[in-house]
Amino acid sequence: MLKLVVLISGGGSNLRALLEAAADPEYPARVVAIGADRDADGLVLGEEYGIPTFSVPFTAYESRDAWGEALIEEIRRWEPDLVVLSGLMRLVPASVVAAFSPFLLNTHPAYLPEFPGAHGVRDAIAAGVTQTGASLIVVDDSVDGGPIIAQERVPVLPGDTESTLHDRIKPVERRLLIQAVRDIATADLDLKELAAS
Image (cartoon, rainbow, N blue to C red):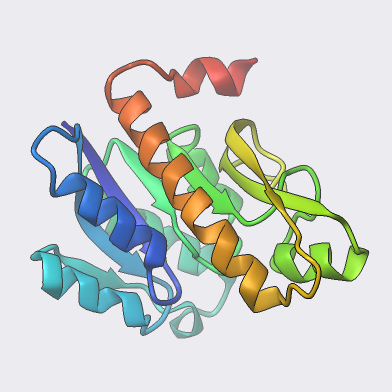
């Protein structure tokens, strides 16, 4: 059984999808802790699903590196096999990448390497493209430039806003994440091999 720590900043919609998948006894992974960099709304999912939560508020530390060290310490308490950044709206410092990668995943609402960064959906709309996508990557020291685990195209429809487009991307992100976690747990996906290629 693969043990996951999931880190969030917001409502945790991808996290909820993972928790729902993990509620199936046949699903080979379990979320052992939910963490956040702030008082995130999604932390209530811990109570709903009976899963411990923790918060390592970025603003409580004098530097990004100090925050990163505290985050590493908290994550390691749970001895996860995999750490998932699920809407964590903050770049983790290199120390966090070094501690957990390639077993450190991130979902992104664009078809990478197109539209990296915090505003992938907005940037796709602004660029006037007819399609964007969703990606799941191994986190490295770049901004959304790590090895791609899975991705899928999503059309941009006439009249789409950032909100309507994001609403169509999110279910694709969830599906990619749930399948990839399953594949990692069953050894159909080797993250070390992927990261080395």
